[in-house]
Amino acid sequence: MTVILIDGPSGSGKTDLALRMRDRWVGADVPVVVHLDDVYPGWDGLDAASEHIRQHLLEPLREGRSAGWQRYDWTTGEPAEWRGVDPSHPLIVEGCGALTRRNAALADLTIWVETDDETRKARAIARDGERYLREWDRWDAQWQLFVRRESPRELATMIVPT
Image 1 (spheres, one colour):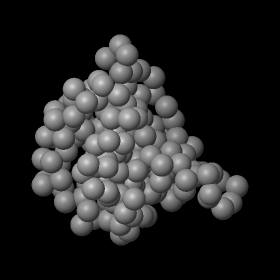
Image 2 (image 1 turned 90 degrees about the vertical axis):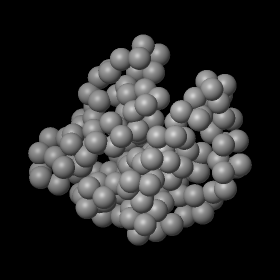
Image 3 (image 1 turned 30 degrees about the vertical axis):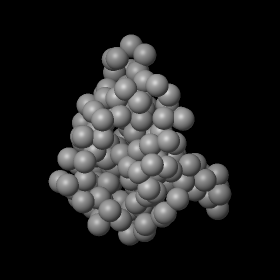
Image 4 (image 1 turned 135 degrees about the vertical axis):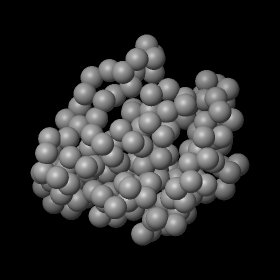
């Protein structure tokens, strides 16, 4: 199984890149794309989602075990259903926090996506609206801590400017 991790700051273009990769994949086994936006357990959940995909998705897949992830329901504020992943298909995991040292060791390709701060904030707010604008500083604070701790850009085998 091929595992690709795509990380970068909010609004940098990770989702667009993941979907373009999936849509242009050559071969019958189209990749499964997991968006960390569907996994974060709330606005303070960056680290929890990163750990969740390692424990429940990346490690089990590498060990040949059943793997999946649990969706978070942003409307109810509660964990939702578990979703399995077909190990016969390539896997792309995209989102802030995907690329940690431990996760990188379980991946075949690691990608860092970046753009300037003004552009990425404008993209993120246009995508997610006023609610994200209210949470921007809260999210960005944990993102900055994550970047200082994990140095995800340095873990990337490919850097994609958008």
